[in-house]
Amino acid sequence: MSGLRVDGCPLCGEPGGRLVWAGSRLRVIHAGEADFPGFYRVVWSDHVAEFSGLSPADRALCMEAVAIVEQTLLTHLAPTKINLAALGNMVPHLHWHVIARFDCDSRFPSPVWASAQRDMDAARLAEVASHLPAAESAMIALLNARSF
Image (cartoon, rainbow, N blue to C red; front, top):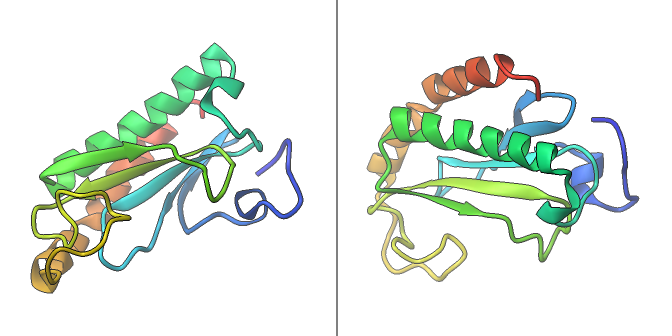
């Protein structure tokens, strides 16, 4: 990571999860949320609070990375839905949540941050998690083919 940093920002000083891939402008991390095995983040390297703070070219680049993560999760995990979010209320450093959602997860169809509606189907989510290495390999190959 290089460029603009802000002291005390957790995404300026740390990866923000298990690092899957890093380029000069952004990185992809696995969030490590136990109930959501397909939870990834695309984190912009420089400290920028809002998406509109990027140049048009950088916005396009960022969204291309989000689309790559989304597509590989769709292909390899076959989720019920992909959720995309760029909130930044708790950590005002630009990052996109890319979350593969399944109708068996404890909060579906509500957001992952909502209260649980049912018990988690641990066996089904473990099966989803078993596909993460293939998804990440494909993700890495596609990200490496671009200049991020």
